[in-house]
Image (cartoon, rainbow, N blue to C red):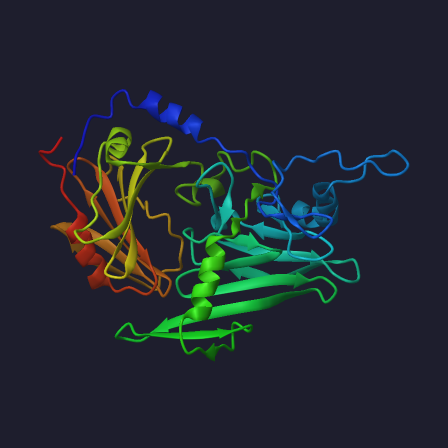
Length: 377
């Protein structure tokens, strides 16, 4: 691992961050044209003037119509984040997320979970249920009038039937692993009653469709409420910070380190999360059939800071070790992570991956990739 001084980096970080500026989208999903064709998302959440009506008055825009329909719900949740999604034939539905369910990898907020609302056949606003993704690596997304979400263990594609006031599952797939990590696949349209599948084709098809979907972009119900609030500060670690794809030299220049993938790793990519205080170096790679996210941040603290960017209900937490340094290992059915601190230079490290993974695997790979910084600066 290479290191260098952090002096004179601030100007470069600010300049690079400016290059990353993106236009925020309204609901974050593709919209349907009058002929049913799909068009690009709106440029922003700001209301437009709409089309002129026959009497010369401007018709309400889709945004204004949706705001009018769901204003009562938004008023009840001033600290929430919202998006309008094209998931129904006759209206945009409302997705509502809490601060703990959103994160901000670039200019707009993405969400790992949301409550779904529609205006039903009686004209009343109805809460339909909750959709939950596999984590920040798989934010909620939309494709062709459907919401698609999930992760390494399950994937679902849904739309809204407004006449019935119901969330309809169009497709679903799950995978379960036994103690020897042999996979069994399931498919169906009822998440609670899947049928065993002969192979992974249904799961793979949904993953491919998810890869081509548009990530839903959320906005705070109360503009500016996300800045400086206690709830926002305790939410996603990467909430306000853009992600930059980099090479080794750029990663070293921006973060003071360059991280390594283990020998034999595939699909290696590097990035930097441009934090206000200290940027996070990231290297992602696939190794022995698993995809890992390896991070490092200069914290200067005596306790490791959680830089994983993962927000699961961990079912197991235990102590481990990475080259003589105490580590914390957390696992659940959806993911696993190992977090440790290199005290002398004050760098925090994390290694995580999706899916069911045991502590020994996480510890083994962490010991492969970690290189101490002492005497290397």
